[in-house]
Image 1 (cartoon, rainbow, N blue to C red):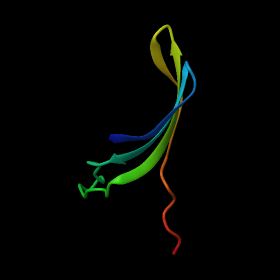
Image 2 (cartoon, helix red, strand yellow):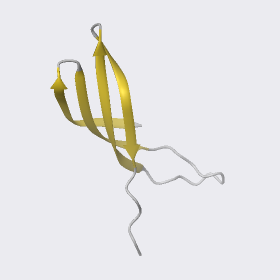
Image 3 (spheres, rainbow, N blue to C red):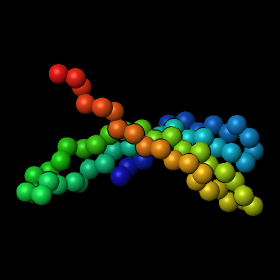
Length: 68
């Protein structure tokens, strides 16, 4: 999985909000066929405690397929 940070905001000295895109490759079906890459978006909230950042909440999403 390749994670690409897009925007990082700091609403407080000890809080960061990150928006990132991701691309996952290398998956295969049970019959060995490759699965197309999966692209999506992540939103993460980090909290800083004693000089270390911790992930407080992370949500990754994949857009729904186009309607037929």
